[in-house]
Image (cartoon, rainbow, N blue to C red; front, side, top):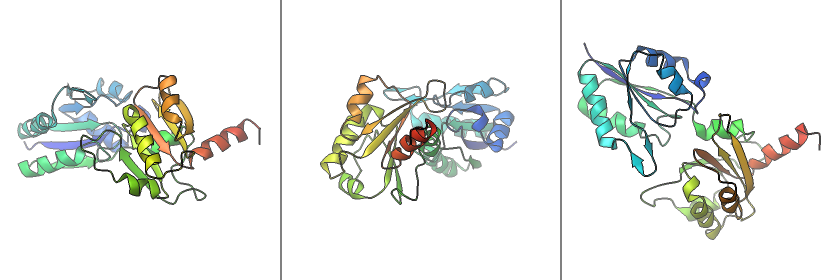
Length: 247
């Protein structure tokens, strides 16, 4: 029997936001290698007969290195198993799904990509922030907040009239804000930090580029969190006021 690997997005953590395709392949899997930040989707895993392997990576703590995960995917597939590699959000949005796809292709392993709802769009939306709006910036840039190598062109990013969405950036929020201000971004630019989106603990802290890092620290915001920088944050504020009948 020929094995196959499914590189699957778990979405932003709500099990009812899994795609039907993702749910079907999870149910059919022989082995599931899953990340930490999949929220209540972990409950779906308990309903399967698959072998479950936790391979989650958090800042400073790696259960397995990426090379080990790649090898496990290939080895299980070569045994003829249906393997699901389950990642939070979408596998191809800072999820290393592309690296795993390349490895599987080199190994001659059959694979399929199953998209997930990315937290870069869904979590701001859950807080009332559309990442695009006709009256706001005409572009969106999604960046990762913890690169091991500094590759961002901060000068270009600061000058671009685009909404900036930062994933995995909470621990570096002070540096991110300082870099943007240093390279020309208006310190009064609206910013929102959405903590634990789509959970019962969801919380939004908003302010400006010059003050948000201090607010986040003072309010003990913890990961996972999505940071949104740009005028679209004002849409959330406006809608809140309209709902309260203040406008």
